[in-house]
Length: 98
Image (cartoon, rainbow, N blue to C red; front, side):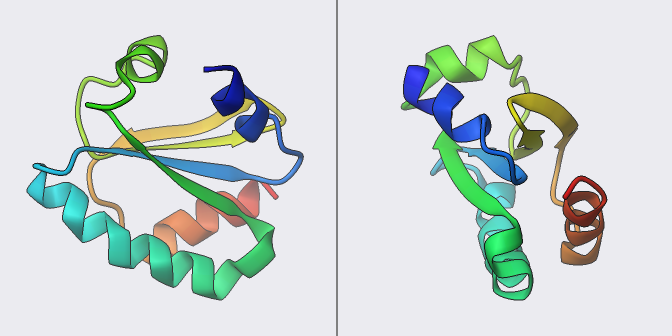
């Protein structure tokens, strides 16, 4: 948990994808996030958290549905939404919080 806190305390946006291997919609998010990372490069850090392997982090952040995307900057939650989002919307959210 301390390591996660260190990661989200970055001064650039950190997008966290809460997922599970068995979740079909979660599998749709991966190529979308790859596209976002390719376009935004160093403007964002993207990490994936497997809810089955990290139940304490998932519980702390109230993950009830997957996939869930959360955007942090300087440790503060800037965005939180469950479901599969289009790349353009994700990019707009990240750039608005850069």
